[in-house]
Image 1: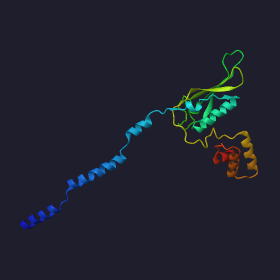
Image 2 (image 1 turned 60 degrees about the vertical axis):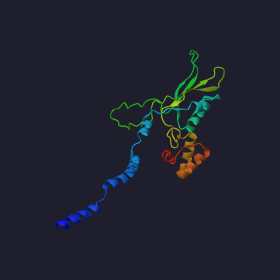
Image 3 (image 1 turned 180 degrees about the vertical axis):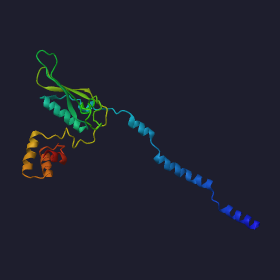
Image 4 (image 1 turned 135 degrees about the vertical axis):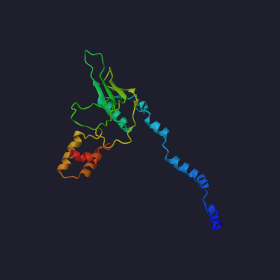
Length: 217
């Protein structure tokens, strides 16, 4: 029996797997797997860094505008093409006693800080688009005529530019004429999708969405 036991030990000894050899073979595969799931700390750090995008070149122009509205329209169109919304930050009108010129200060919609509600009992989402964006433009009326010219005060944006602005509450506001068209078509029981098509036919640059048509009916 003792000899049989010795023989069985020798037999199983030859069948025992070589675990060291198996781990050696699997090591490169495990390393490959873990390389795929390891966090990319460099990329994470890059995302944490503040964003600074300079659009001074696209807003710099030597054009003279016949009216204030033409200047404002041009600035907003350029902003929309580059993924930002240009808003009026301040407007000043020169008077006979004042030495200041009539001017228009434009900025990014993300300028300034979020203002908390005065009533503490009212709850509101803490998310805000305001991030103190420093972007500023100044439109000034010529002292020798009615023309306006544009100057870039600061072309920097401290946020990512929007990839699309379709449905934006500010850019997609309906004009009074569009509201009249929508009202007339609604009275005639025209479907919202057909109303939207009509609005876009009249204004090829329209960013209005079907949701806004439903809300305005």
